[in-house]
Image (cartoon, rainbow, N blue to C red; front, side, top):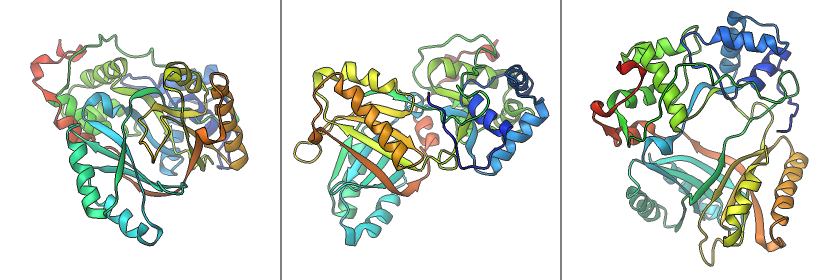
Length: 366
């Protein structure tokens, strides 16, 4: 992973915290002590109180999007899909307002493309609902929608590392916590649903974040710690840690690169592109004949146009190792405006997946 500087006014300690804890934060009742000790071992002199105060300040200043568990909505249940649409310039604002008015629309971006200039995410509790929602949006806007569901995920997630201590971002404390046994149970229990809804917006930045969550959901702290740890093992939680606001760190160039990859090469190209540390999302999605010729998406981020262009060139370089990439075989759609960003509605998706408590497992069931 490349390390980069930032225009944000961050101290050495703050840079160390952002680098160190983007994943692998301890899932134990009092996490700040081992986290501070691990930082001290890496040459960053801080105690538990100082670390807590630093994370709280970063959170309050908006340098972090949140602190806590990054829930994998797909593994909780329901589905989300990416949708593209053309919005005529003279009607753009009206159409954006109409699309944003649908509660199923979680994110919506204006992107630089001569035709498909509006891109949004539809999140529903049941995959069968996608067709209905898109039909309603088409009726309300008079514009055709192009559904681009994920066919295969090669990578999701990235570390936005800064110049400073722990520049490699390899401080992983995920081994700390209770021993858990992943299950293959479908759905979640009612109390797991309550936990997911409670933590989806982040953990409280307090001395005992997991205990405070336990109090909020009316469960023992041992159960909360064990369930979050098991969710990590099962993929329901992607990671626990600080989740940076990449805009606050200077990453203002958001480029969605799209590629017309030969279908028989997707299985090789996908992992290769996903291995680039700056690629935050990497998917196979369907084409739409006559409108959208691309079947591979790789999201990149940069602090300026030059850095973004260099990273996109690296993606093309990897592509060229597998096939002869022509100028018409790819494009980059930069986001010019965030139209809506409310997050995935995990409460409704989780509600639809609740199973009987008797099927639940975990260390607090003993």
